[in-house]
Image 1: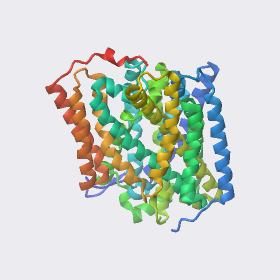
Image 2 (image 1 turned 45 degrees about the horizontal axis):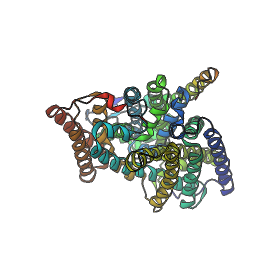
Image 3 (image 1 turned 120 degrees about the horizontal axis):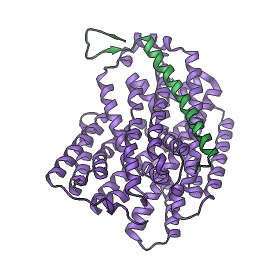
Image 4 (image 1 turned 30 degrees about the vertical axis):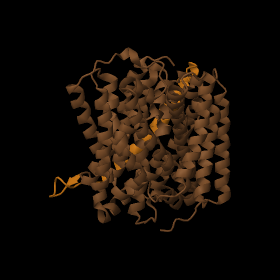
Length: 50
Length: 474
């Protein structure tokens, strides 16, 4: 990230951080799906869905 | 940029029919399970596990607004637009301990209205019901308008036809299957939404990589990458407080508490909130891609569908169509079911006909589902240009309920008159801030005033509430 002279008003995200935000959000979305499916499988085997 | 349909009407209708038949068939099948009494219809038997409980929270919170308004925020405000929308997940996470507390204090409870009536009395209940009615109708309207806009922008359907189709489908399976149908379909819908969103986002950024988007934005819209953007910070605060107001007061979330197994209720709210937060960031990032490409939209809430169709062709349009269709139906079914519970339990049973049988209560809930769907259609018939204007208006009201609900659950000295004044004064000040300052200030002012009144009033005139009074028989 970079700051300019108007320190308190501007703090621009640089390219690497911007890329990280995009990638992390997409990975988090995929992990959320996997988590849901894993919990469902576990509860289904234990007959604890409903 | 002219918003032209990207999906052939035949393909759009095929998708509508396919998913409509699927939701209705599953809803009717799941609705046949269980004992068939009012608790089964309204709360799915009160024994939902972690997977379904987490998924239904996610699916209900991924609304038409998340897929249409979050990209609008990203497009208009940049990174803070995305982050502030994602902060709405805090509402679910912060409600987690309260959810467990509700489950402990109200083992037989059915609605948020039950709590307010038993904790603060009839007048506070009346104020609360007015707030929740306005919010719920506003929420229903945004979903209905989102439905009309989606089908029109993607496939050229008439705005009203799209609205009728989506509301009709959600109403049908909610009517026949009750809360069990809502929660069961929510699981499939949440998985479908997340998988398809991930596909759209990955494909979009493969065509227009993040470094290229960043380079364009830093040259032409640098303020959109500014983490200290004053308006962005204010929107973030507002979003977090607004979401707390939405979750803390609305029966969508209270009904999930009563429907879930006690051992999973707190975990499901934490997991649901955390998982949900990635969704608006992913959809909001599509808005940034649109901005980097220099596209202008006559109607900014069409950013996501138009961008996906533009970047990914017919396949992209079809994916977004399914995502938004699932988002809208999963939120509308929750709204219809939980609001019908509120009307049937709080107004029909507790106020008008306390002698009503279990079967009559269930029938009242079913009739209300249909009535709400009709009212939503009528209110949404005239089309508004921005969903945000509808959404922020209700923020002033619901944010005023955060402290009365939280204090009422944990603090025996919380005063009933203070709760009433807190909700009224918070709503009034929030609405004045909405009009005089900016729409995204409404929830901040409302919460602050409500907190002050609630705490000062309860310290000055403390009550001694007996928690056992909340264990009212069903």
